[in-house]
Image (cartoon, rainbow, N blue to C red):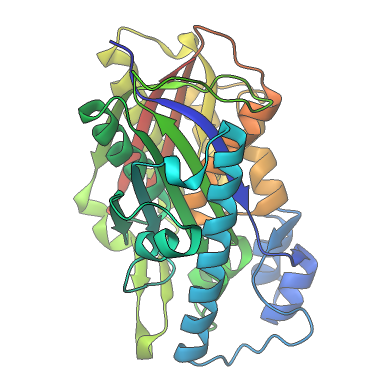
Length: 351
């Protein structure tokens, strides 16, 4: 029996793009080590939902929350509408919606707000995946796939929105400087169909892949190495320097588990959709998996053009691949993202 299929992907960013030099000037770091985090990051620029001329690093918690709410809703709507348009579908065609974010909190959650803003059906089934970090778009993808396996005639969507610029923090910690150097704002969405739902994507990327299987790998012994703390109600990132080593190891381990379970090898995988976590994580993953520069071109292109948009990033990488790699029928792909927990989340794809 056919698996749920990704029909299309849509992305969105705030209007203001900052070069790394401009972002560094806003952050105000003057020492060479912290400046190097910005200028040697493999990132040329990032989109941030802040005013280039009126940014204040002294926003109150309430001001940050208001900015998160406004931007997350705007970007979520834009990304989902673009994905629906590429699939040739309308908002009211959706039967299921999974949303996710980790850079802010809304109650009612983002799914409920999108129902109102986009006029989605009142009987839409939905779920919000919160506080799962950069890996949460694939967790949302799992939820959509579970729904479509139960209801193969349904149409589903996932929306991952992150406004990292509302969770910035300034102190003397090196890890906060790293976070301020790489994280960015963006939203990614995917429209998916069950096995018996008619029609395929009409995007330039052609027919999207089936999601053949999922796999989760959690290493709770590393629980305290990544996430957020909340001093005074502000979000301060927790990002241990050890993550770059652990992340690559877990990515390779999860890839091996997914492939072994289906009798495949790394050589069978033509398309790698890897979360653009950072330059060093990508480099270590390339060595661990013995991948060519071409295999990681989509991940590096997204990092260079957009930075790390947390959970939305892996959907940008998928969109980049669909638009540039021209996958062929029968091709295998692996889609993997990493997040706090410490966790790796993966999906085996087939075109």
